[in-house]
Length: 189
Image (tube, rainbow, N blue to C red; front, top):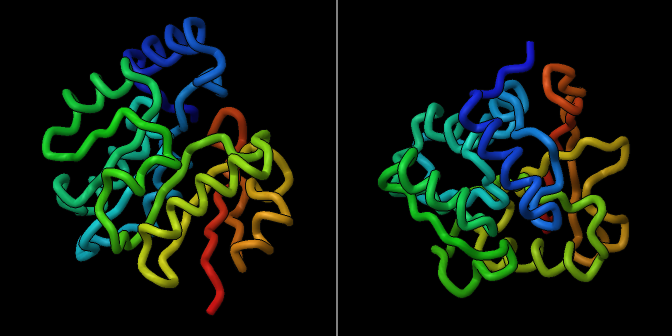
């Protein structure tokens, strides 16, 4: 069953209509996909970043895993979403910035980066900027968790090769609209 809070859906659709270049999906990530993404977070982690946060479906799942809010950095380009995130998730660090600027403001030594940024349609240069920024902030071997709706990996072959990434793919999550897969990327060596 597709589960999306009505208030989240209303805000999401409103922002999609106002800013279609910022919002690439018609609906927020569903709970089943959010849980699959958050499963890579553990309560003892010192710092986690979520990029492309949207209305916070994945944020809820991350915090439900037991991560204290003050250890969670949220990066979202849409200002209306940021306002809502600050209300819903006090204690988290909300940044109204694109993901590739996380190197300028965020905590280093991240234990994980959880991404809902729609990377698949982006050119390699932007994929590289986002991934490069995340990798500079992450501990060696930490997971970069990325959702995708297409049949291909959400990072191009060239970008994966450039950064020396391995990946694992989840099962298809049919209880999401559209159906999604979750990839976990790690830098080799």
